[in-house]
Length: 148
Image (cartoon, rainbow, N blue to C red; front, side, top):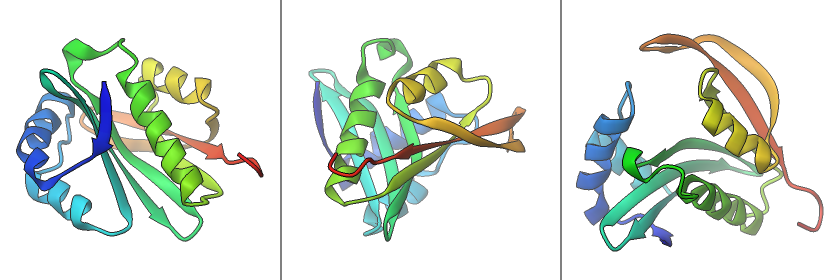
């Protein structure tokens, strides 16, 4: 698996995956807007068959928020999500962020386990944050230690 920065030429496939994976997909133009935003770090995981996953993270001053991590359904459980998250954490460390936040569906136990395994802690809950279906979001935070 190769991890690399997302390119404009990836956006059509990213849009397809958004519609396949999420109940609230981003449009191709929203993905393009994120990719073209200087504050956003966008990464793809690619194998011989093409894009297997991707992620978007937005940084502001000394902290960041993971906006999306997605893995092609048939390629899950192959550590692709872990690789994407590790790439984002490495980027956050390189950019000297102090912490990274994210929101995850309360029912998404696999994602929550991945985040916890990688040092994220639950810091709050947003009631009925997600609309389709209606569900709470769990707010998680990763804090960089000095010298990491």
